[in-house]
Amino acid sequence: MAKAKESIRVSPSNLNLFRECPRCFWLQMNENIHRPSGIFPSLPGGMDGVIKIYFDEWRKRGELPPEIREVVKGALFSDAETMKKWRNWRTGLRYEDAEVGGVLSGALDDCVVDGGRYMPLDYKTRGYPPKEGGESFYQGQLDAYTLLLEANGYPTAELAYLVYYFPRAVRENGVVEFEVEPKRVKTNTKNAKRELRDAIMCLRGPIPARHSKCDYCSWGESHGTPESE
Image (cartoon, rainbow, N blue to C red; front, top):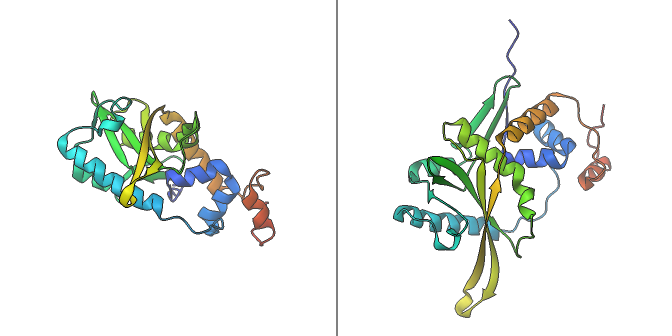
């Protein structure tokens, strides 16, 4: 009997990297060689925490925050304990493709329920208003979150929500006013399944060639990362 493939676990953020550059993805996952990074600003992480607390308060009321009601339809997922688990990547949702030996796992910011259908909701903190069509940058991530819900027995509407927060003004006593702009995004779980398979096959194969549009590949060439085969 053939030995089963050992499962490889990836996250939606890992798939973002795969989409940008298969070589950088392969090096990070197989060789633990990460792209160089600067100082990560703490503001987005802090905002993420307070936004979750804010949404949890509205969850207790059984209502949506008023600033998103025109676009977002339904109600926040009411099970606060389950939502807490879904927000932690260690206890979050997972999907397994046993044929290729791949596992997708990730943490959701929130979830909306409408007519028995479940839709991921993701917060994004930005320094400026989102550009028209900019939500396409997050398409793969939202496809993956929708797949995670569907694979765990939560029927979806092939739909997700992005909620952008960006500063508008500073008032007295240091109070910062934020503009909130929700976006509705159609999702495709078939694309997420295909991308997971492609990513796993990439990791099981030889190191990909350098990506001509990837600055990090050029950086790696001068710092001794492995050559393509």
